[in-house]
Length: 613
Ligand SMILES: Nc1ncnc2c1ncn2[C@@H]1O[C@H](COP(=O)(O)OP(=O)(O)OP(=O)(O)O)[C@@H](O)[C@H]1O
Image (cartoon, rainbow, N blue to C red; front, top):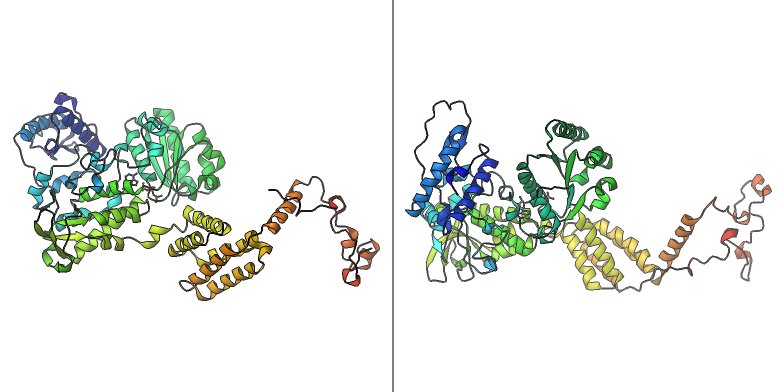
């Protein structure tokens, strides 16, 4: 490819990324590959500035110099040509700081070589397909990092100093900074986004249908929308974002009218992304229904709640529902691995153990390289329960806390080397995670899933499973009174007259929880749950009552009147009308009383016999 074929279309931001990507592929196609191919380049002298003073400055993605916009393309060509020569001469990179400052989020991935097997599995030397490591051209070589940062190498990799890591952790949260910009970096969700899937082909061909992205927190809904936004820019499509938590109906109207103008005047399409769409009430959702229908906007809604309940049915039928799942532990490992690489933290393998007995401290700990144990990463990947934001926040907190503590640990490596470093262990990452985040989402789908699992386990007389689901809820912060109320219902619905004491137990458990609260009341609920799991079950009453309701629902015409003999007759007039006439007061009879209690037309109906199976 000729240098002249590379063009910067935008001054900065997206243009940087686009130019960087072109540059990467150009470099990759060019020759033998390897990290040295992606080193920043020494640049030709600055171009003359005449006549360009008023133009916005543009930063060259290769050498990071700022130039007038008009000169950037010719500069870039020369810069690239010069760079090729430099790479062959083994040129060493300039200082890292400006490069970090200029890089868009997620684009800096200093490639510390992975040193343990777990995260290398099937990832082609630490680079997984679609995973961070798989990106080409985004990071510099290990040697360059080492030379620049003075980090110590253990097990073949390089770790940055605490001060550098701390600097990288400042500002935006790690999760935001690492939000992938392209599908290539989007990890997991193979079922809906894997190769050959419909959605992937649609996205790759920039044919974006209206979508509802449904999935648990941190599984990548917003990220997927962000990727669509990036790719839609290439086709000139507008991408507008609203959050249902803060947007008002008028905001939606404004977006719609702007979209109508853009469509009419410039033939530009608009994609409207609404985060947490379930927070819009149904009438707010109605506002954009006709505009989705006629194609004024393509809607992308993200929700953690089941859209069948939370999204207007008419709107739902015009959108494709994409169900995203919790990220697997493997996917989480890939995401965390990308994070530690981008921070310059080195992973310690099983054989590179810190000497925990000799933890020292020192004010210069910021001068020491930072390491994280392999076990700490895999534990984090499991504990964050498929929520990438929780995982990345946990990692960030663990690193920040450890760096702030200023403690260093002597390390001995498999190869017999020893060194001091700031080491993040499994315990540290556990501390960095909020327990309630790990186990349970009190407000969301998980709340209903767990209570349903508890109900079914008790119905199935599985006392172990019943206790497990109970503990999942209580440990996750569920309101014990909510569980107790469900137990009251269960006592009648599933145990019923097989053990009428169950209802008493449930009500007592409710009151007990009310009196003493958590955590003491947990055992009250546990006792009740086990009692219910072991109790005989009967749905006789529940079924019979359902049959009665069904009978009422199916009735056509006016409901039959209450038979006169069953009516009370408190006044003379009522008596005269025949109310209560012929009623047989049962206690007055020794023998069984022959008397009808159902309306005439239902005479002889047995709701208990007519049980549906
Ligand atoms: N599939 C993924 N691949 C790579 N990174 C991901 C993925 N999913 C999430 N992340 C990371 O986790 C962060 C949070 O994800 P995101 O905001 O997309 O979650 P979400 O599903 O929209 O959650 P919420 O419902 O809480 O808003 C992102 O900034 C990104 O760094």
